[in-house]
Amino acid sequence: MAYLSTDKVEHHFHDVVIIGSGGAGMRCALQLADAGHRVAIITKVLPTRSHTVAAQGGINASLGNIDSDHWHWHMYDTVKGSDYLGDQDAIEYMCRAAPLLVRELEHQGVPFSRLDNGRIYQRPFGGQSREFGEGGQAARTCAAADRTGHAILHSMYQQNLRAKTHFYQEFFALDLITDDEGCQGVMAWDIAKGEYHLFQAKAVILATGGAGRVFKVTTNAHICTGDGGALALDAGLPMEDMEFFQFHPTGIADVGPLITEAVRGEGGYLLNSEGERFMERYAPTARDLASRDVVSRAIAQELRDGRGCGLNKDHVLLKLDHLGKELIMSKLPNIHELALRFANVDCTRDPIPVQPTAHYTMGGIPTNRFGEVVYNKGRSKEGVFPGLYAIGEAACVSVHGANRLGGNSLLEIVVFGRACGNQVMKRLREHRYHPQLDTESWQSGVERVERWLSAATENRQGPGIADIRLRMQTIMQDHFSVYRTEDVMSEGVQHIEALAAEMEHAVISDANRLFNTELIEAMELENLMSLARVTAAGALARKESRGAHARDDYPERDDEHWMQHTLASIQKNKVKLAYKPVRTKPMTVESFPPRKRVY
Ligand SMILES: Cc1cc2nc3c(=O)[nH]c(=O)nc-3n(C[C@H](O)[C@H](O)[C@H](O)COP(=O)(O)OP(=O)(O)OC[C@H]3O[C@@H](n4cnc5c(N)ncnc54)[C@H](O)[C@@H]3O)c2cc1C
Image 1 (cartoon, helix red, strand yellow):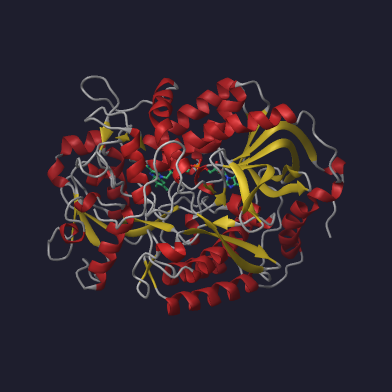
Image 2 (tube, rainbow, N blue to C red):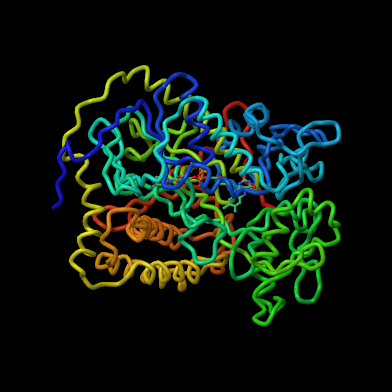
C-alpha cells in the first residue's frame, strides 16, 4: 500500500472547503467569504469553465415583469412539474426566495436582457402557468439573451475575487476525510503538479454538479461526471432518486449540444416527418411548452410510430425561422451559432434536427433545505451527517422531484448556495478549532491515485478507460432511456454490474504525474460507474411511471406505493435500496395534493 506521511502532503486549514466552482459553489462561497470566513474552493477546471457557464435559457422568478405573477403560482407549477415527488417545504422556500435572489444577481453585475421599460426581460418556459394553472402561460424566466449561465458564473467569479475566496484550480477531489465526528476535510490532487493536498475544514460542501456523462448522448460537458455523489457513496452515504434523469427534448440530433427551451418560449415549435405540429395532440393547452418529460416522451413516441425525420427517422425538427432574423440574433444568438457549428444549419432559414438528450440529474446527495447532508437513521428518523453539505445539481433537496422545470436549476443553485452558506455559519460558531487528524485518515485518497499510476508504471495489461466508458454509456443509453421496461432494465443492471467488476482490472498507460489527463479520466470513470450502478438499480425497482421515469409495463403513477424517495447506497460492493417519504408539508401554505398531470 502507498503510504504518505505529513511531510509529503501540503496541509491546508480553512473554515470551509467547497468542492466545485459552478454557480452553487460560488454563490455559497460568496455568502461565507463576505461574512469574513476563510473559504476555499477546489475545482478540477478553471472556475469559469464549470458547466453553469453553458446554461442558456434563464432563471425563474415570479418578478411579474411581463404579466402579473406570484411565488405561490411558481410553487404550484414546480410541485406539479415534479410529478408530486418534490419536497414541498424546499419548493416553497425556493419560490419565495427567487425574486430576491434574482434582483441580488442583478446588483452583483449580471447583465440581464431588458424590456423597453428597463425591467429584467422574462420569457415563457415549459410548465409555467398563472393562477394555479387557470390563468394561461406565465413568462417567468429571466434571461441574459441565451447565455444566462455565462453571465451569472462570471459575475459570481468576480464577486468571489473581490471577497477574497481562495481558489485551488485544476485540483481534483479524491476522497472525503470522515470520522465518528463527521466530515473533517478533503484529500485532493493537484492535476498540474501531480501533488497531494490535504484540506482540513470545519465544513465541507459538495457542489460538484451533475452526472450527464453517464449517458452516451448528453448536453453535459465532459466534466459532468458526478464526482461529489461518488465521494458521498464512498463515505457510505446514499444517493437519492437517481432513477430520475431528465432527457431534454431538444438536443442537436446525434451529437447532443442543447438547443434551449427558450426557442420554444420565443415561439419556435416541433414538427414530425409529416410536417405536423404533433405536440398539439399530446398537450392540447401548453403544446410545445408542456414540461420536458412530456415533450421528450411525445418525440420518442413519434419516432416509434415511424414519423421521425432523416434517413434513419431518428429525429424531429425544431422550426424557428418564422421568428425572424432580428429576434433570433438578439435573443438566441448562441443557438444560431450552435446550430451552424454542430448541425450545419442556418436556423434563420431552416429547422434544426433535434432528439431527446440526457440533460439533468434530478437525483443526488440527499439534503434538507439548509444544504445539510441527511441519511436514514432507523425507520422514520433522518440524521444529519455533521460537517458535510451538498448544493446545486450534485444535491437532491428535492425541489425537482421526478422532473425539473426549465429555469429552476439556475434558481436552485443560487437559492440553496446562499441558504447553505447561512447554515454553515451556525456550525462555525460552535466549531472553532480544527481537530488533530490521524495520518491514516487520508491514505485512501493516496491509494486511489497510486493504484492507477502503478498499473501504468508496471505496464500492466487490462481493459482501457475509453473502451469501458463507451460501453457504460451505451448500456445506460440503451437500457435506461426515455421509455423503460422490466426486461430491458434488468438486462441493463446485469451488464452494468459485470462492467463494474471488469473495471477493477482496468489500466491506464500514462505513468506521468504531471497533468496526467488519462489518470483524471480514470477516476472520473470510477465515479460515473458508481452512479450508473445506483441509477440502474433504482430504476429497475421503481414499478410505476412518474416524471422522467416512464415505464411501458407500469404506465400509471402509483401514489399509494411509490410516492417516496429512493435511497441507494453501495455497501460491501452491492447496491442497497431504501426509501423515505416525500415531504408533502410546505413551510407555511397548504400542501398541493397529487392530481393527474395534464398540460
Ligand atoms: C447545456 C446546459 C444548459 C442549461 N441551461 C439551463 C438554463 O437555462 N436554466 C437552468 O435553470 N438550468 C440550466 N441548466 C442546468 C444548470 O446549468 C446546472 O444544473 C447548474 O448550472 C449546475 O450548477 P452547479 O454549481 O451545481 O454545478 P456545475 O456548474 O456543473 O459545477 C460543478 C463544479 O464542480 C467541480 N468539480 C466536479 N468534480 C470535482 C472534483 N472531483 N474535484 C474538484 N472539482 C470538481 C467542477 O470543476 C465545477 O467547478 C443547463 C445545463 C446544461 C448542461
